[in-house]
Length: 417
Image (tube, rainbow, N blue to C red):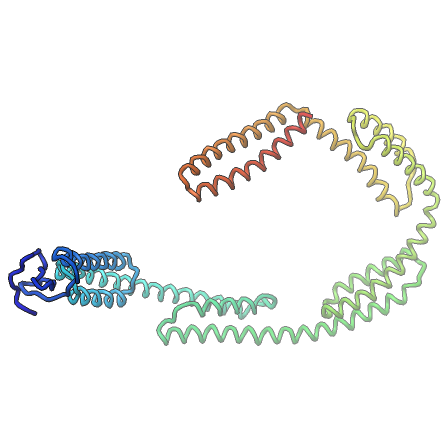
């Protein structure tokens, strides 16, 4: 450092010598910071003052980052020390000492942030301790449960969560982990024992069901329909009480047992069908009435006429006797279909002629149209401002409301038809 000499072009923090060398003044001493070729003294001085201004921007930005907590305490301290050294050694003209001093108050800020981080870490450890305590309790509770279906997955989920939690002090963490691991081991052993016992039970169930199948085979050709049907119901109750033999074995055994039952009940049905021949003429007559009623009534165009025709039809229909059992459902379904069609037409007619329904439909159309008008106004303003975000939102909203308006208008048009 040289002692400051008289400058022909002094400034508050620097000067330009006659040979064009620019000096920065610090505490009554000066340091050469460089020259600017082919520049006037004022231009040269301004050049190095701009460097000081750039450093001031860096100080401002670093101050903001530190105060906002964007840097860890250690990162902040290193950044401050580096910038302080850069400022004091910079080839720039300005209040470098004052600029470096602006970094001093950040020390207290960093210390406070460090304290907060320590408190947050302590809090996180405490919360982890609480959560691990809870998880151990859950694991120990599960260890003595009979949740064989989802228990394994629950332990996996607990273990995955455990890995995400921060470690406690070694003794506490090891103690909790030992309890957790012991609970999981206990559950695993109990689960294996359960399935071993289940395997034995399934073997016994298989033997029982095979015996039931043998009894069913002895009944299959019986013509004593009533008592044999009762016997099959008893076999079915025993089958259900026998327990499971394993999915695939159960399916195979059930297929055999069901085939025997089906054979018996099919034969019984054939006999009953033969007995139902006396009802066949009733069926034919009812089907004729049904076909005629369907052709005259459906589709329903005049509710009053349709309902009158239906009353006439149902009166004649009910006079006829029973039909075969296997046809009753189909016949009744067709009758209900005619009645349902009349009721639905009646409902539609009421909705179409109800003034309140049309009024509500008109209100809905007006509401959507008004909303679209508002959105179009917002779109025009957004386009005038060039606000792409608002333009996108308004356009999307208009499209959605237009769909709703079209649907509402269609409903209104149908009501007004």
